[in-house]
Image 1 (cartoon, rainbow, N blue to C red):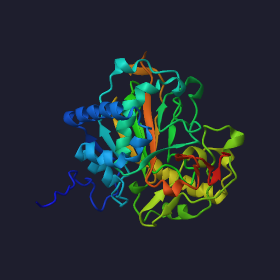
Image 2 (image 1 turned 45 degrees about the vertical axis):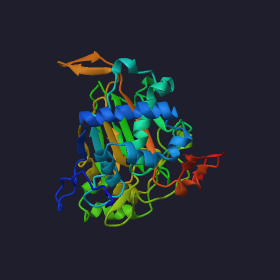
Image 3 (image 1 turned 135 degrees about the horizontal axis):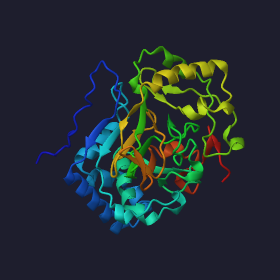
Length: 370
């Protein structure tokens, strides 16, 4: 009998070959696929108990390719291997999971009060998506001192004006995750369990520029600073002033490491006049290319290549939505974030010696005391 080989079931991106991609593909998940993912999450929970179970994580890729709906696995596998000029660097999976709002209960005041048990099945589903890239979910000590492989992102009253996921009343400027690290995550997933405030998500891809754009050329120079983000106190955030490039890798199809809030709007960053002039020219063009048309609903997931695509969100009033011109109370926004690396080997120089999935990098190669 002839061997059976899988072939792609996902059509290439609709962007024409001569036009930079300006928006991510939006893939509507079918009712059958959604039902299958729900079944998978429940089954894996019965078998492994938790998505951080070493026996599960060690064979994550095998499970991803065996049990994910083929269309979804194929799509994510392509995202993990396509860095071309036509790859936007993010995909939206609309209606990926069913969210039982009653079972979810009220949104807690912060991530600290989030009941871990309510995230387990979503954690299995999210991790399978990363496994299809393929990549391994990891945690960063710089994020909540680790805090596990899946983080609840919830607006907090005392963080409302911060440039963090817990903020709300100010725009969260687009950024690549942990731009102040050399070993930042390769891929991110954002699973929306609740977005009653109807907050649009922002995405910005370096591929949205024409490759001959002159503002990009100077970004390859290692003259830019990036302090640690707003999760840190000012005295801890400024770092040692390490200079890096904003763009790196292949000159024709570059990767990006960028945080508008810290590199441009943080007056403590200490950019040189040349660096700031270059950043401002780039930011003027980048802002015009931000995709801001998608309002996530419960069950939607955004999957991002952190080297190609930055993310952010609009300002909003947490716990209120507009109805007929009036602001009325609602449940606050609730999102689950997972991060992953394609190679555990390449992060072991900055990983915890007893946990290969825990990255201990503090700021551009500096390691937290272990």
